[in-house]
Length: 270
Image (tube, rainbow, N blue to C red):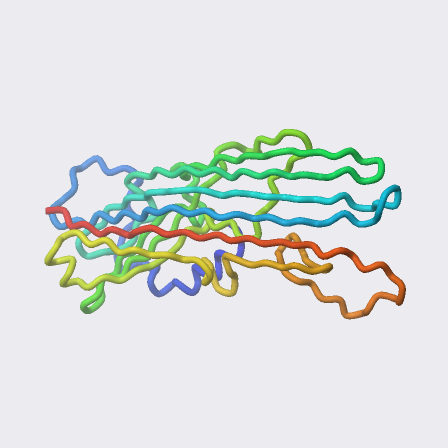
């Protein structure tokens, strides 16, 4: 689990903490659902992209760095279903889980001095976690708290690579996106208890974009300068000015944007 997720888990501790005496549900439930049970479904979809362009530095035989263009497209969806007693509590094991995704990238290097031009691609499929991977802190889980007139639901999950390594051709490498949103699916919603009692089935929508999935990190960013850092898409700063006459490096451009949306559904078994 990326260490930055720990910050969000700490911020959400009040919502995500189990109620006193609550027991985590087992991964499978052989008995039929009991009347009054709460069926929680955390589902959604997401996607985005990451791209950067670094122009050629130097001319002709003096070329030092080839023009480099990288582009990545991300797409994914998931559905995790849990069952909790009417009193709420926590479940760190879904009753059912389906998820899939695809990361696709292309990398192009133009000819530079003695280096030939090259183009390559990479793909990486995503899948839902297996029960054996339940020790990961972002393994699908849900917490339901009934406090006053409100029902609070917190959900967490992730998607994992379906193969150990990306499938690449040529010189391709699937570069790490600054924010892997699919690896840190987390959100929380609240619904009126009276609404759930009256309808028995309430769906709450959520969208997380610029605020990011954890404290202090955005899901989008960009830079366009000679000091653009293509690892983070941030404009770097130099404390010391270069000597007079030093060639100015051409500006690089970099941008990324990841979003995810979905629903948390709470249904009361009749």
